[in-house]
Length: 358
Image: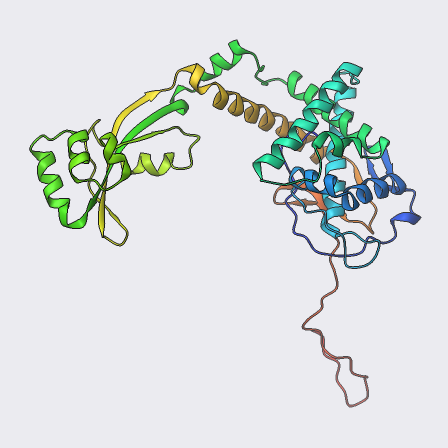
């Protein structure tokens, strides 16, 4: 859909979805309403179609599981879906009113491809084995639901492209961003030496005598990298180990072994050295730059989205959820359920029985 920034991370608690079928408007955002029939159709499609449930679960940060009773869905599934619909309607209204724009046929086709690509990427990222392709899942949606989601995707793409502060996804713009953030694209290449505890002293003595990184690693290290003279590899800020390595080599001169770090309860001493620490060329960093720019654009757009939600007039059918202000901003919250524990047993009041309240 749009997912400028996933706003709802909701805990799953099973409950029946009651009362919606008897109400004409399940959701109203700034005067635009979504009927209970339409909302029922959408949530039913998601929770009863395995492919949709699989692909949309990561997009909405919700498992979209069924509820405890027949024909019921979980409360978290309901509020997650309603929350997304509120955001989509708020963005659509802003694009139409502020930019006087309605998605063209070409923009809708682009939005469809983008939406399917986003679902595919999320499934791959989270190792999901969905029963069909994202394109097939989108095609399986009820027509009105598919039209709504694709239009919302198109609105969001348009908003990101035209919002002040958005960085165009062009090579010149990406190169300019790279030049301003060069320190974020450094590549640190390291050598390691894994030395048995009994040989740590001899290793350090050999290094003090001037033995090179390569020679000392080959002579004393038991790590497989010893065959390459201790050459271990290179890491960039995108690597999960980048921060830890930077901490370990902080203050070290190039091509100088660190102090030994205890390894496997002190059975070994692990030495680390920086062979090079250079800024990547743009060509090598291009994918990381593109990812960072997209995140920056999304964060920029999400600020506006948050502002729109704070100012939105939202009404949610009370049987479905409540529009509330949380620590993360405005959002749809699940209805509170009655307590199931710590409830005093009922006692008839008599002239000699004093009522107590807990």
